[in-house]
Image 1 (cartoon, rainbow, N blue to C red):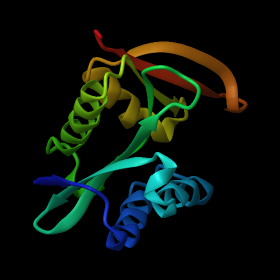
Image 2 (cartoon, helix red, strand yellow; image 1 turned 60 degrees about the horizontal axis):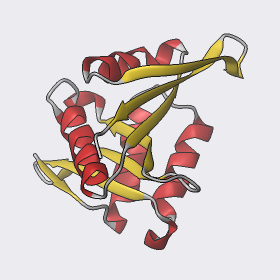
Image 3 (cartoon, one colour; image 1 turned 90 degrees about the vertical axis):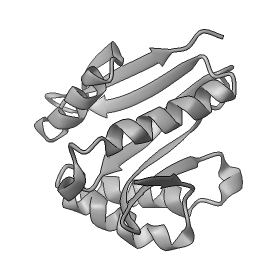
Length: 154
């Protein structure tokens, strides 16, 4: 496995892996791809995991506007055929290393409570992220917004 920056040729493989997860709606995939398409000066940052020369996962993160030292993890996804190999953990570790290197004090991750995201929530909990908030019925009736956090000593 190799971690690297996003390349323009990564758009199609990222779309394919997002769709392959069967966790994201078409609208969610389009939002993720909008971030991939944003110019680098937009503030969105990416880490891509490559296995045997193929995109196997990615993460998108960035500093949260109007905050001091807070960062958001916007997206993290791994090709279902390559899950449970440590790629998600490696991507999260790379994001956290970048955040800490920039003096970040807080990483915030928002996700949904819908059943399709159960594996994602379990991943965050295995990684020791703190469930800091729940907003009932945020996305839809019965689909809560869950906010996970990691705090860093500064």
